Image 1 (cartoon, protein in one colour):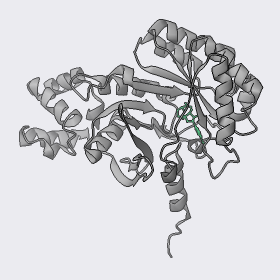
Image 2 (tube, helix red, strand yellow; image 1 turned 90 degrees about the vertical axis):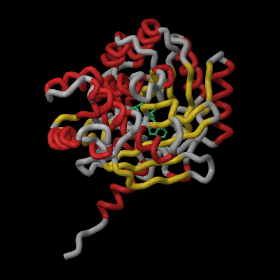
Image 3 (cartoon, helix red, strand yellow; image 1 turned 180 degrees about the horizontal axis):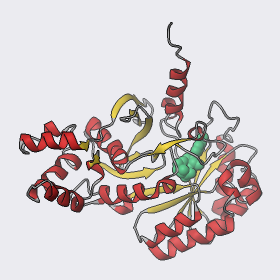
Length: 350
Ligand code: SAH
């Protein structure tokens, strides 16, 4: 089956040609899929019925099914649990901000990076998401909220650079002027630090923001919480991030999940400030979200502020990320995990 929603307009145009159709049909189809967010071929009323029927036979029309929508009473954050055609569940988050709405999307069903504090790592990787499945998270949220989405963060479940080709295709499609036309500058991709892929991505010269999940400032400590640190050392990572910043002209971001008693000492702050200085990075501090299956806890607010103040004294550009949607399992794969757990615990009746 042809994955029609992952096609660029050029690919769609040649596909229409092979079907003996006029090129303008490709534009019409593209508009139905990527602007009008049609739910099926039968919605596409300005296409001849015969064409719609052929498309339905030959193509897979990716459409996510909304299994749950949870709206935070505290801050308006909305969390979505979607099911895919094969029954896999993924989650996405809608975050309303004064400067525009953000959507956080997943890039894989599960993840194989194994970070110790992360709920998405627990069940391992199931599979990569297609470009269409990444787009659809934004499309269904736009349709459900009726709101314009202006910012995208690829920070949901999965390691985006472990699904590199589909990620690039997704970025091309979501920024396409024939589609939602989101600015590259409004897209952030977060990675646990796959050095080779960071360098590959740099050569694409995109204007997206690259965020590195650092979380520790020595290789030894990083290896304890992030298995990927066994493959790449912090020094190589910093070189790759500096390379990315110099080739693209974009300032990079470091994500640092504050974990009480693990990475929140004065030495950690000093080390972090020194690392961030190299590529001139912005540091995002995120008090770790407790995950049921793990023992990691965030420092209290006061300690987190002290850590932040230390960084500022060193001249680091730093913010503590607001915790959005904490009342709706909005953090880091926790809803998907909870639902899988509940489903797993339902015994078939005999
Ligand atoms: N795999 C990518 C993107 C997905 S994770 C990456 O590692 O960056 C998005 C961010 O959430 C990462 O910075 C990740 O380390 C962080 N994260 C995962 N679990 C968390 C938790 N329980 N509390 C706080 N941050 C967490």
